[in-house]
Image 1 (cartoon, rainbow, N blue to C red):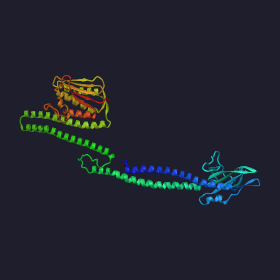
Image 2 (image 1 turned 90 degrees about the vertical axis):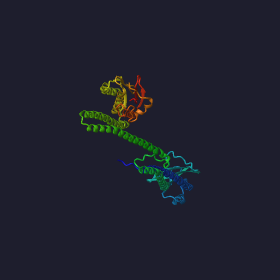
Image 3 (image 1 turned 90 degrees about the horizontal axis):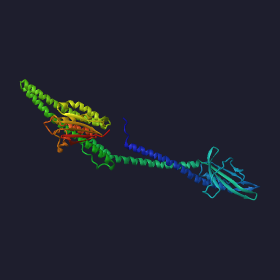
Image 4 (image 1 turned 120 degrees about the vertical axis):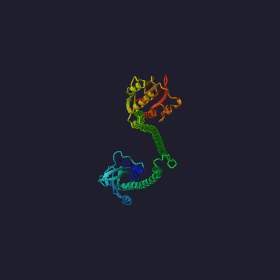
Length: 461
């Protein structure tokens, strides 16, 4: 099983990735900004050198000559790590001084607006090196010569790249130190924020298994209140469930103790007698008690099945079922019992009624409702099992009915209105649990003629 990663490390990892991306973006931005700043600074020096060379142009014997002073190129000696190239062309673009084949400005290169000069700056490649070039036009107005001479001064870009890299490295260094500081700050902040969770974990682990008190809210941040409330809500439901189970066990023990004690007393009484007729009577009454105990045990097992079935429904195990078909099959199975008790059992289910449910639980619900109706209907009475759309089940009998003030209590476990009527008091309790598992509504009403009508409204499938 994959071990979940630490929340602290996950936050730090995500933040570190974000900071790395920001650092790379800032480093690239710093590099290009540094390159732009370097171009601005060194372009000024290039232009100054070109102007110095332009100042040395002169006419001799009808031709243009260039007197390039050393100071024109010496400016770079103190702040440039690259090489300097220059070229002077006359008004006919003929080389009169400098290096040959120094690249000219590409077509469409605009004149610079940063300086008051007829100059154009551009990047080129010369002798396999990247160079930055300035092309300066110098007007020549002599009696025998009139036009524009061109002076080109180029510098390799080592100094510019070095300056840009230096600025980028400095930016990355500062951002790296800031990132480390931010990660350390986040580490301590997250650790401080997680302390209430650690206290909460410790409080839960140190509790006894039967300690289901709510967790306190005063020691956690507001963001953790929903979690604590959820845990408290779950604990409360667990406490109620434990109490219900404990009460059920106590009630079941009580209900089993009485008939078992009576059965034992009858057997002991029969053993004291020497009359065969007394033995037979004892065995017959013991058999009846055993039947009631078996019925009670089956009812208890039915409650256990209801809990398992409810869990299956909650986990998506419900099936699409025809309630009319289930009622028809149950009616045929209960018909012999109804005939034995002298009660007419009728079924009203003309069309299929579909719903989603657990078939075993629905059969248990139908069986308990019909059995309860048959048990309280006098001989010659009627029990009607009715299924109508969209998904309504009704069981109506001609019995004595249930007073309004007692209709809520009949769904309690082991509650019996008439102690003379055989039963465990679990039938309607089981029905209520099955209805809750299917999100169905159950209600009790007066019958149309007399007796009781039980109506169960399901969610249609």
